Amino acid sequence: MIGERLNNAINEQIKNELESYYIYLSMAAWLHSKSLDGMGHWMRCQAHEEMIHAMKLFNHIIDRGGDIVLQDLKQLKTQWSSPLEVFQDAYEHEKFITGKINDLTTIAREERDYASEPILAWFSDEQTEEEAVSSKITAELEMVGEDKSGLLMLDRELGGRAYPAGSPLDPVAGAE
Ligand SMILES: [Fe+2]
Ligand SMILES: [Fe+2]
Image (cartoon, rainbow, N blue to C red; front, side, top):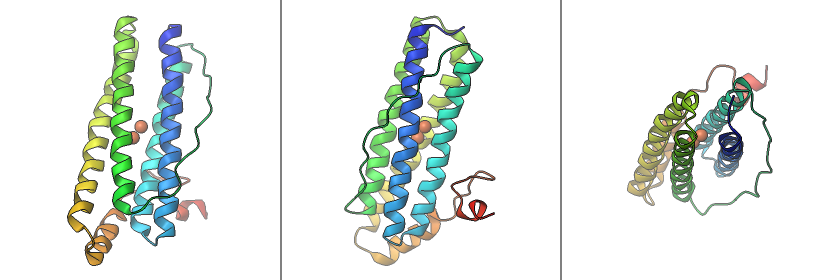
């Protein structure tokens, strides 16, 4: 059974992951409103992954006999000045989440909760990848600068990201 301190900290992280889901969905909406549909699609895929992250933690609490308490989500940013600002925010957000995963790992060790180590190690690896990807796209947008054709090329490229099968965020799957 999971201890109360780690249980509470994971509940907090479920909120952070759901907030990530919500943030990326807000970014997707803004990108679509600017006709950057490839980037909007990329952000929907990102949002889907965050929902999965929240559910991984949700299931872990259930499996460990803990209590899930879902928390309020905060008011979100809905406007950005440029796609560069969107991806800069995404990169900053991923760094913030990495810090939270590190805190959880510290708590799990202090509480000697070895059963939580594999899932937290998975999250740690995932954060390395998410920071790397959002940082790379930010750097590419910086290179593109004011070049509209470069922006369109990058939009097309990011539009190629695959949804996990059956994602409700996929407009094609949702239409079925
Ligand atoms: Fe996440
Ligand atoms: Fe993430």
